[in-house]
Amino acid sequence: MTLVILAAGLGSRFGGLKQIEPVGPNGEFIIDYSIYDAIRAGFDKVVFIIKEDIYDVFRNTIGKRIEGKIEVEYAFQSLDVIPEGIVLPSNRVKPLGTAQALYCALDKIDGPFAIISADDFYGKESFELLGQSLKNNHEFSVIGYQLGNTLAETGAVKRGVCFSENGILTKIIESKVERVNGIISCEPIDGGAKYTVCEEHPVSMLMYGMQTDIFNYLRNDIKDFFNKNKDNLDKCEYYLPQVLSDYSKNCNVDVKLIMTPAVWRGVTYAADLNDLKEYIRELIDKGVYPENLY
Image (cartoon, rainbow, N blue to C red):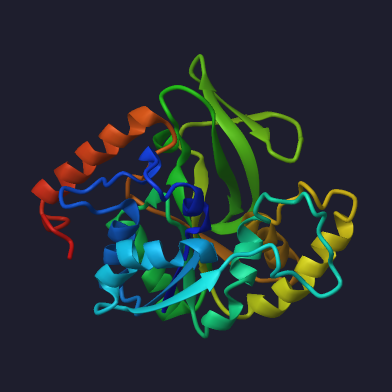
């Protein structure tokens, strides 16, 4: 099983910015804990999707720590990796989105795989559930967290709000989510109507289990995406949640929604960093992680 880590967004944060501050007692980053959890859940390969210009510093900072513990490969997310015949505007600088990132790594993946973000702390139990789903059942799956547990104390966050029937995902709505006067308000990123949900409603934090069956669909769908957005090529983004939802519907493939008991942690705002460090310290004290991962 392969763990695919979306880390191209770290490119702007290497070089001393505080978002890449260690969270563990011996300089570990969030990404180190994800890899540690994945290895003990049965994953035997990791593919980092990064920007090519940070390859050296990324490998020396993160890659070399784990090269003797799991097979490591790198894929580079670039504006140049797009279907033949598509020409982006010369002023396009912004990355093309999470689905295009996966498109850049297709030749590095040859079996069941999970895909996660480098910025999120998912928890040991989530990797165990994902590994079981991929290894034993060869499923497509989304790991779900209770929405109320993923909100910031102040300010809005972006979440993939999940809807399901009998444990099978029906859609994911990428939304800006905020708790206002005790009510959770969701505003779809695509401009749809606002809606409200309860604290326990499941959300995706971009932790998916997938099979390589989706690759042929992705190769064709990315062409359709760019053709549909030919008048918006300077701004459009190709999102993985939408691709997974469309693939499930168009190809009649069940995507299982698996709720995890794990607590998600991330660093959206500056105050989140200390909370995450304290949480990891608690887990170390409980024996979930060793004092020094590597």
